[in-house]
Image 1 (cartoon, helix red, strand yellow):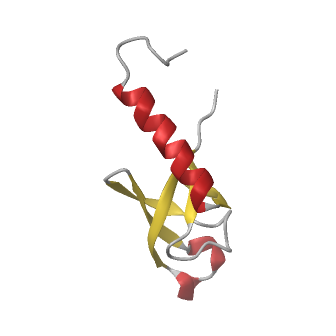
Image 2 (tube, rainbow, N blue to C red; image 1 turned 135 degrees about the vertical axis):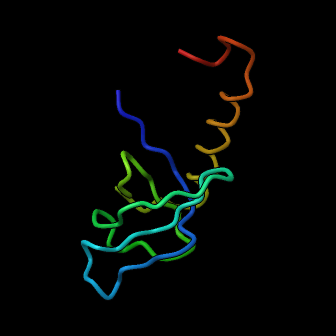
Length: 85
């Protein structure tokens, strides 16, 4: 099974090197990671992106991102076994 996680794009670098070299700093509930933006060339600072295996694969709307983030956080705080498959 594959999982893509939403995060907020807080900074972009590498624009001057072309679209395949764009790197975004993406915040995931307090953790910030570098993510390749080649598959989401339309992404801009402040957008929410869906990230899989170090690649932003899509820009998603803020409401959907926050809903998914809330669901993931609820699973993390659930008692053992509850809410998990």
